[in-house]
Length: 125
Image 1 (cartoon, one colour):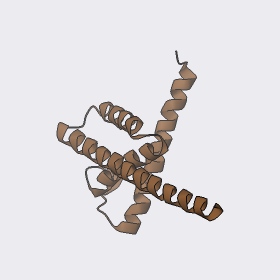
Image 2 (cartoon, rainbow, N blue to C red; image 1 turned 135 degrees about the vertical axis):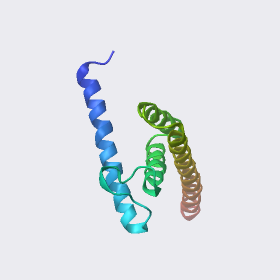
Image 3 (cartoon, helix red, strand yellow; image 1 turned 90 degrees about the vertical axis):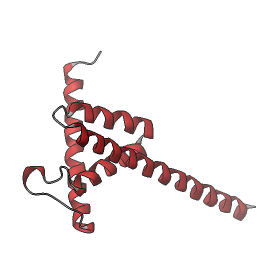
Image 4 (spheres, rainbow, N blue to C red; image 1 turned 120 degrees about the horizontal axis):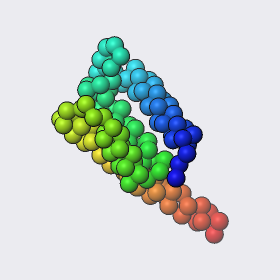
């Protein structure tokens, strides 16, 4: 069973991750120019929000695996009790797209790794 310090640490990590993801979203927004709102909720229900969900789900999947990304992002959506169902559906769809992107990257990276390894073996022979 977790003690209070472990729970607080996990919540703090979640908040820190959200802050880092927000900063990355703003960075990429400057680079690619997708829609950004104004005020406190400038990355909510717009292109920046879609990017944030897709990028975050992909990042988690690449650092863990797609199943873990799904669990984490689904849990996040469950915490958003005030979101109307259409917002939750869009967020979940963007999260799924992020996992698909991560799977494609992983698949392509694996193919490239195999090619590099095969070439290295040929050079050694």
